[in-house]
Length: 133
Image (cartoon, rainbow, N blue to C red):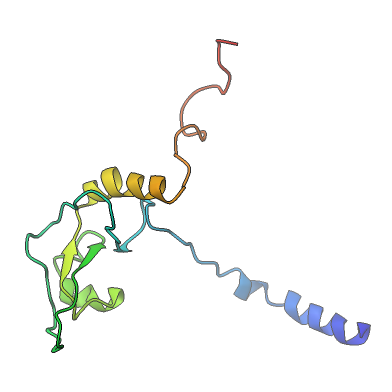
């Protein structure tokens, strides 16, 4: 067994270049997230355009429900170029405003999904000790 295990471990250790290609994961509620937003019981979204945008009409018995998306600046303006990335070309899409996402939706999402508040985690300029003690 040791004769077999050693070559396998050596081969695995020879792959650091492949393992070094690490992606960054950004979740809903975080500033860098772009994609579908589940409104649920969140406050009513502020949208960029009053009417939903549809790139390709899809013939179905029942019209698909609209999606609410947060997209990078410029994607909404050239939606036909970017809709495939979001699997949303045949769906009516509302683009939410970035201010609404950051100031209303993200805090609501973090609170309702049990994410800790960002306050008090070393982002301030305090010295870490209180003078009251």
